[in-house]
Length: 397
Image 1 (tube, rainbow, N blue to C red):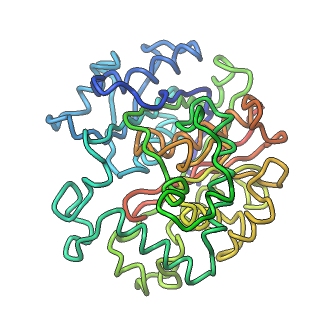
Image 2 (cartoon, rainbow, N blue to C red):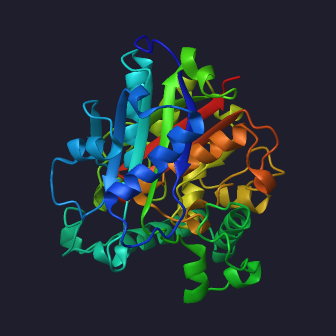
């Protein structure tokens, strides 16, 4: 805490619309939100001191991605710091950006993330003989296998039902129909009774959709210059924590803070939340709005429990009592969540939550606007929950 020389303020950001044309190059993906955000804030490329960039695009054959991004964005010879931590990668990039400003080294830093799915089904590519062989490969575990096992374990441990999951998904869909950036924005609104059926079709509607190619960025500045760019700057803080990616080590891991939990909880998220809240000077009781990276409803349950929005094992009760809605003390997933906004890997899974809270605090969310929130939090995770990142925003005016 003693090394933090000044507060970090967020002054703008942007996310690409879903379903980017398949012929776009990664350079087009990366530059689109970068230029849009700079234009919206009046910041020139030459004003940017550094870019922190996370990416997930297997069409890039060259390892020298940093200089390539710097060249594409036009910021040469300024530095680009590259990070790689799966879907929460931009949480790490934002941490790099935050440190560069909080330390006093930089005044204006852009946190950028971009990702593109494989030309075939992205989730099917994540198998024991494909791109992710280092994760539980001896057990043949795919991301889908892991998710199914985790969700079933949580359901059995805490008594969550398909009807509980349907309530979560339904509220995400309700918000998405009021968010033009959401992938499901123009789709027919699902019926709660249909979402509650135990069928493959309903199961698909309760789970995350893939946005395809997507990119997003956020602009952070030192507190003393924030008012040059906006009359409503937002204070930003961030923290993250790792744990082993192997499922067998989710049980009785020999470390305080991890050994007490298992596959049905997110202890790394709890650790990241504690650190982020301490840096931001808040407690969980101060939180007015929350966004989660939820590829399934059960994962959303675990996330709000890990963030301290409700006690561990009681998320289903929080949701059933209307805790996600605009009328509650702490609305959840007003951007639409992974279920209806869409899953974007490092392209937007962390940034979408931060940007939604940024816009919510500024009162810019239209029909999905919460009642004058002052503090917002969001979560994002990387492969098999080996990484959890938490962002905190607060009104800075």
